[in-house]
Length: 262
Image: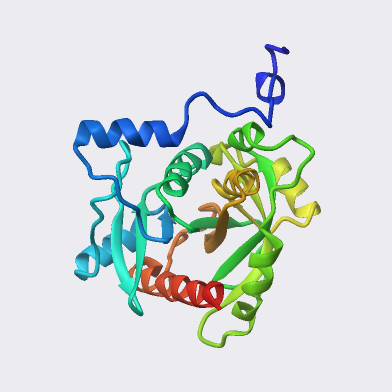
């Protein structure tokens, strides 16, 4: 094994992990005295935590008692008689994958992530949201799930189902390519130029790892970027709109679930 670059060596991708989310959840349920039951079939990762705060403030969400994670709280809310789970502040590739592994082990069928993202090259026709269809794997977690020469992309079936989003008049969504990084404060001019030259639209911190997990586990995961900033290069950046973008994000979640259910 190359001890100078262990992240790219000694990866036996077909070998099962000794430490599994199922076993972790078993022990968490035992310690917390939580009954074994399933989480909602549709769950949302809310890295900024704004959607969760809006749902709690408005009285729409309640704590889900089936969730046995040590690190997070799962809330539930309803849409058209569908129960949806949501977890706030799941920031970064490794944390997002840790939580998603446990959601999958808890019988979640679809995970939707909506993360704030930085726009690399501002153009007049940029949408409010971007469906991330392809990623640059500039984080560490994905290399534990997929070989380095494998692309971390959105599942083609899901991509096809979501195409009607692009033509909705009441919400602005386009497909795009993302740069997923572990180091947001190392987004240098030279690195940004390379990404722009390679057709990358935005930068965020979770998508490539989540798509790698989805490919490895044959799971349904969809990543959206909420285009809120240009990496704080101008004053007034990071504005997301009414209720910090929560109402628009919930509308996107609802439309996504409607299309997946068809």
